[in-house]
Image (tube, helix red, strand yellow):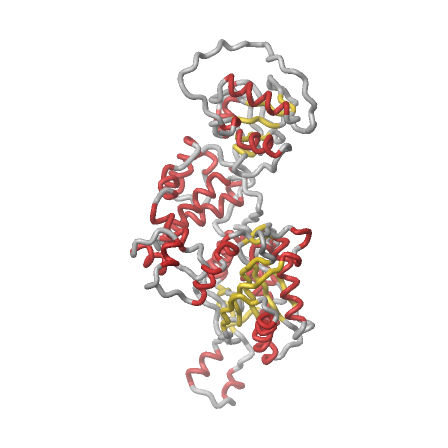
Length: 537
């Protein structure tokens, strides 16, 4: 057992506390001068605290026996952020914006790595972004009511970066949302997805229920989960879901490329609980996509790194430019929003000088090229059904009608910079999921906006367009229902040999708003422009 995580068993006599004196410790070389640690004894105990302090000092960390203004990091065990802040107030210590409150897991991981590891949401008990009074009276604390008043219900009016101060809550919400999705309960699924989206945009960490006042999209059910996590450090509902056999099975089944909810439900009802049993059952029939999903399962469930995504980008550009030298190839999805890892890589392709025929033939030519080179492991090609005058879909989750293909490509390790690609013994390549979308050049801004995401950002952007601006937006166009297109005058239409129905349709035709860039679409909607890295809702 790891001595750092060792739990002492059996009753133990409590040693008398030595007040005002410091434990004598032999001097150790300090490797990390910028970090000054204080390990909180509360709920940890004197013996374990002394053990961790000594071990941390041996690893080169500076650990102080007493609290002082020089402390930069407070490390605690089995304490919530609010409990540590309350303890600081009792000690008449003012928590500054530079003070980090961390779980002991950060210190354990850092000692194991031999250096301070990156502080992530799972380590941070609270990001102290408010000026707390030394008084323990909570009424004197400065909470963020002014910031809360400005928070919109729409993700397209919130700047959401990857710097999430509320991981402990959003991770829980995402588990619950996924479980409701598996049970096809759209109402509760959306409720928890919206709640997670709002909390990700907050510039402060929620440490009490008072902090949630005025924040949109937090219903009673959501607030119950928040309150339980604040009080107990975890949610009993989330624990129950994670231990639920149905949730575990659906999570496993849907991890296979090509397997959705209906197939998962069928397999679960048939009594399957493992993929090995499913693969070995001769009575089951699999689609070509599912066969590929099983065949390359280990590669596809492992994360795609940014280095791998960029290597795939080079592969895609080489193939596309062989047939359309002036084409623009843009990486979209999570990688465009600044993520370091993902599950697939999406690319939008468009060309200013291409004809309709060029656009139709490009993806088939690229696929054929990769097949000849032995790089194509799987392909699902979807023909374009795009119509220029078709009104945008009213559905916030509607798929576009552009030509596209869903692929699995063979990425050789030698193509990845600095050997960052995860290699397996004896295997020189990795299977990577790649989606290619070909769109007309005049629709590139709408397609780029739609394929960049995030999913919740796009949902809210389309809801905002419909409910607040009386417009309709999708990956193809922006349609203004409040204005009439004056192109089709009554006298001009009377000269055309068209039916009465078509006559009235064209005369009252609303306006399709043109856009050369994402910035122009935001402007049409009356929104401040958000950079791709600010759309991680």
